[in-house]
Image (tube, rainbow, N blue to C red; front, side):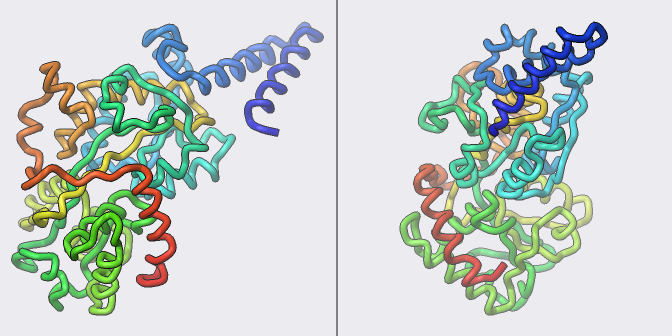
Length: 381
């Protein structure tokens, strides 16, 4: 029995009970709640709520929002979350597993399906989004309607939100200059060179692999040079495959990290207070960019709050907050035209020698499959 049929059957039983018993007002209320939840889970735009006022009312009535994998120092998610909480104090924001990978976000949807603990929305890399559409609800926010159609999923199952440029960040105070990716093979980097996750599971690691592949003469069709590079790093004892967090960087466990420019900026600013020069480089010819994707769990326990959160993310307020965290929001060009962009925040973004390389969903799916077949055999779990 599928979820939708189950809820409809439950609602019918409760309505029948309320008609047969004089003291069943509570059951009737529950039936109405179940029907509303189904309706909200099927909503494809704010119009299905009668406009923003109706959506806000429904979300406030739910009073809860489950978010996952949003570290506060990643593209200023902390600032975005606080701004939402300030605007909607009636909604309690529950933050789950902030350091989860994109794959683990989808695992959380599957593991907690049908419960109040399931994530209402996810923020995942393109490769995972393309492979997980069966878990997503179609929805387009008012702001997202202005995004370049070439960047969007035609079925509105996921929506690009922000990107950065893939880069290498390292502790220059301790390790000195890095001018080439070959410098990472130096024995002084023993056990401290890391990707931010596993390439087939985490968007940051996927794009870190693409960057290294380009730096070693590969391209989107020829992926072997990147794998050979990391295999050599492992054989030299320089590759560290633990999950990268602020704590592992601060402790020195991961002192040279392939990651998004916005994460490098927040790391640089944090370590400056500790007397550490966290330097950042984008190797010429390796510029890679890929938007993360927002998606709503089709069985979200708080479907109205999930949609209100999405509406907020595609406003100039939230988009500018991402930019303050070093990310390039998807509506940046539109906000420049509208005069709503934060020029001071834009001026802090890392510049590149050429536009970042982007790739199609088909490329992403193909590369992910190749990594699933080859990474663990060459590098290990």
